Length: 196
Image 1: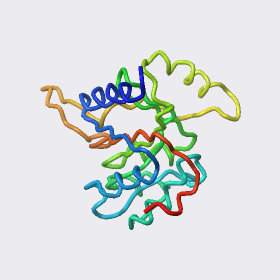
Image 2 (image 1 turned 90 degrees about the horizontal axis):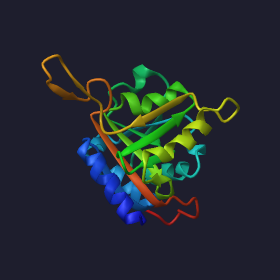
Image 3 (image 1 turned 30 degrees about the vertical axis):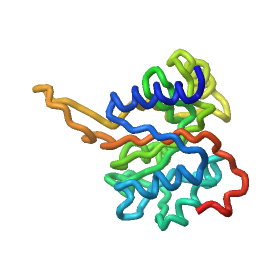
Image 4 (image 1 turned 90 degrees about the vertical axis):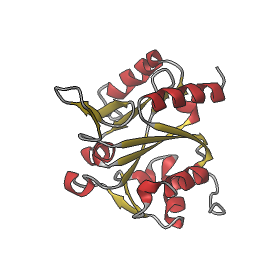
């Protein structure tokens, strides 16, 4: 399956779960998508600690600042809770289910995707796979004891949703009200100085 067909399937599945998926050719385009989203009306975006050193995604931070966004590193649940928007990166996207796999080693990084009202997730087009079964090998690697082990792993499909005993569905009660996944074709860390 070619990348455009794979993305189209991912987009359909995520949309069916209440999320949004967009394609970006590069980090500059991804920054523009984030900066113009209504959730950024206050121009405040929560990012995980040390996101600047996360390759290749750290290169998007100066681009977001050029759009006038104020970036705050997540520290405590109280600081992050109900913030208008947060930004994370995924290690995998699964077309079959419209899911992303988030993997972090600190609670402060994890709460960005748990407590902000709109959660933006960056994922490389190279990390978009057709089937859920293909996530198994990566999950085994991420959970293997050792220095690369990830302690917080989540498979996220759509915004948070819950239903009461009367089956009344509510979005965003125990997590983000909106999930916005941006699949980046070329998340290059090359020269982005001319991007606006």
